[in-house]
Length: 111
Image (cartoon, rainbow, N blue to C red; front, side, top):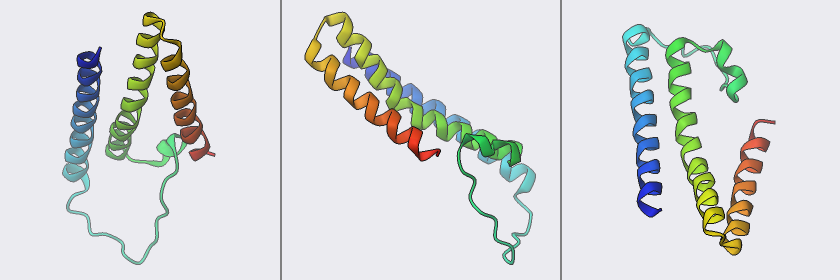
Protein backbone atom coordinates (compact mmCIF):
# COMPACT_ATOMS: atom_id res chain seq x y z
CA UNK A 1 0.00 0.00 0.00
CA UNK A 2 2.80 2.42 0.87
CA UNK A 3 4.52 1.92 -2.49
CA UNK A 4 1.29 2.48 -4.37
CA UNK A 5 0.62 5.70 -2.45
CA UNK A 6 4.19 6.86 -3.04
CA UNK A 7 3.82 6.12 -6.75
CA UNK A 8 0.50 7.99 -6.82
CA UNK A 9 2.04 11.06 -5.20
CA UNK A 10 5.11 10.95 -7.42
CA UNK A 11 3.02 10.57 -10.58
CA UNK A 12 0.70 13.41 -9.55
CA UNK A 13 3.58 15.80 -8.90
CA UNK A 14 5.36 14.82 -12.13
CA UNK A 15 2.18 15.23 -14.19
CA UNK A 16 1.50 18.58 -12.56
CA UNK A 17 5.05 19.76 -13.23
CA UNK A 18 4.83 18.67 -16.86
CA UNK A 19 1.52 20.47 -17.39
CA UNK A 20 2.71 23.68 -15.69
CA UNK A 21 5.99 23.56 -17.62
CA UNK A 22 4.22 23.11 -20.94
CA UNK A 23 1.87 26.00 -20.11
CA UNK A 24 4.83 28.16 -19.12
CA UNK A 25 6.71 27.39 -22.33
CA UNK A 26 3.56 28.13 -24.35
CA UNK A 27 3.07 31.39 -22.43
CA UNK A 28 6.65 32.49 -23.02
CA UNK A 29 6.44 31.53 -26.70
CA UNK A 30 3.31 33.62 -27.26
CA UNK A 31 3.68 36.48 -24.77
CA UNK A 32 7.28 36.40 -23.62
CA UNK A 33 8.38 39.50 -25.52
CA UNK A 34 5.37 41.62 -24.53
CA UNK A 35 6.11 44.70 -22.45
CA UNK A 36 4.22 44.62 -19.14
CA UNK A 37 1.63 47.35 -18.60
CA UNK A 38 2.86 48.53 -15.22
CA UNK A 39 0.31 51.37 -15.15
CA UNK A 40 -2.69 49.02 -15.19
CA UNK A 41 -3.65 46.82 -12.29
CA UNK A 42 -5.04 43.46 -13.22
CA UNK A 43 -6.66 41.71 -10.27
CA UNK A 44 -6.00 38.10 -9.51
CA UNK A 45 -8.29 35.45 -10.91
CA UNK A 46 -10.31 33.49 -8.38
CA UNK A 47 -11.11 29.84 -8.86
CA UNK A 48 -11.93 27.63 -11.77
CA UNK A 49 -14.88 29.75 -12.87
CA UNK A 50 -12.47 32.51 -13.93
CA UNK A 51 -10.74 30.30 -16.52
CA UNK A 52 -12.95 31.70 -19.29
CA UNK A 53 -11.19 35.05 -19.06
CA UNK A 54 -7.70 33.58 -19.24
CA UNK A 55 -5.58 32.90 -22.26
CA UNK A 56 -4.83 29.33 -23.31
CA UNK A 57 -1.40 29.15 -21.66
CA UNK A 58 -2.76 30.54 -18.40
CA UNK A 59 -5.51 27.91 -18.44
CA UNK A 60 -2.94 25.15 -18.88
CA UNK A 61 -0.85 26.50 -15.99
CA UNK A 62 -3.94 26.66 -13.76
CA UNK A 63 -4.85 23.11 -14.76
CA UNK A 64 -1.38 21.95 -13.67
CA UNK A 65 -1.83 23.67 -10.32
CA UNK A 66 -5.23 22.03 -9.89
CA UNK A 67 -3.62 18.65 -10.56
CA UNK A 68 -1.05 19.46 -7.88
CA UNK A 69 -3.84 20.31 -5.41
CA UNK A 70 -5.77 17.15 -6.31
CA UNK A 71 -2.77 14.87 -5.73
CA UNK A 72 -2.89 14.77 -1.91
CA UNK A 73 -6.68 14.51 -2.04
CA UNK A 74 -6.33 11.45 -4.27
CA UNK A 75 -3.88 10.04 -1.75
CA UNK A 76 -6.42 10.43 1.06
CA UNK A 77 -9.17 8.84 -1.06
CA UNK A 78 -6.88 5.93 -1.94
CA UNK A 79 -5.91 5.49 1.71
CA UNK A 80 -9.58 5.49 2.65
CA UNK A 81 -10.30 2.74 0.13
CA UNK A 82 -7.35 0.71 1.42
CA UNK A 83 -8.47 1.05 5.04
CA UNK A 84 -12.01 0.04 4.09
CA UNK A 85 -10.68 -3.07 2.36
CA UNK A 86 -8.57 -3.86 5.43
CA UNK A 87 -11.64 -3.25 7.64
CA UNK A 88 -9.68 -0.96 9.92
CA UNK A 89 -12.50 1.14 11.37
CA UNK A 90 -10.31 3.49 13.39
CA UNK A 91 -8.28 4.56 10.39
CA UNK A 92 -11.41 4.78 8.23
CA UNK A 93 -12.90 7.29 10.68
CA UNK A 94 -9.66 9.29 10.89
CA UNK A 95 -9.24 9.30 7.09
CA UNK A 96 -12.86 10.37 6.61
CA UNK A 97 -12.26 13.27 8.99
CA UNK A 98 -9.14 14.30 7.09
CA UNK A 99 -11.00 14.07 3.78
CA UNK A 100 -13.90 16.12 5.15
CA UNK A 101 -11.50 18.83 6.36
CA UNK A 102 -9.72 18.91 2.99
CA UNK A 103 -12.96 19.14 1.02
CA UNK A 104 -14.38 21.77 3.38
CA UNK A 105 -11.27 23.95 3.13
CA UNK A 106 -11.18 23.71 -0.67
CA UNK A 107 -14.94 24.25 -0.96
CA UNK A 108 -14.98 27.36 1.22
CA UNK A 109 -11.98 28.84 -0.59
CA UNK A 110 -14.05 29.14 -3.77
CA UNK A 111 -16.98 30.94 -2.11
